[in-house]
Length: 185
Image (cartoon, rainbow, N blue to C red; front, top):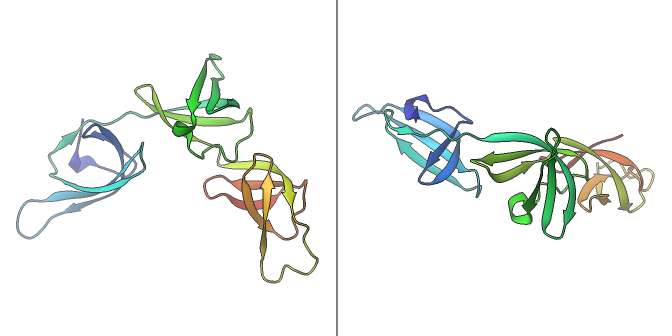
């Protein structure tokens, strides 16, 4: 149990049957009346954000989130298979559990699987990946003055906007959090 007076950013709590992560918190001491804690909470499973106030002495159970490194093996229909590299146990996850987290992830790459009480709710891809461009229009010399970009399809099927000098079959580095091109490799 954690009291509202001890809230910090990033702490996960169980509230009303859901798991929330504290995004923002503020201790408020009005001139009149009792002090309270104003918070912004993000529902970990649905992604929705709610605002809630607590009395500083209120207690909530702290949720324990397990993050485990697992290797992404392959996709079979709507199921994606991951393997624990220590025990070689394989787990299938549905497309609903994953969302678009694997947009930039190739087979056999390591990901973090986030779970609560054995139920997986998110997959965190590596922060940076290197992928080969399979399709893009040719760039023209001298077209770089404006910092223009063009769409390019990478080997996982995702589309990334790249500078005009990047050609087909180039390997590029991508930030998976924003989906932005970082550099050529």
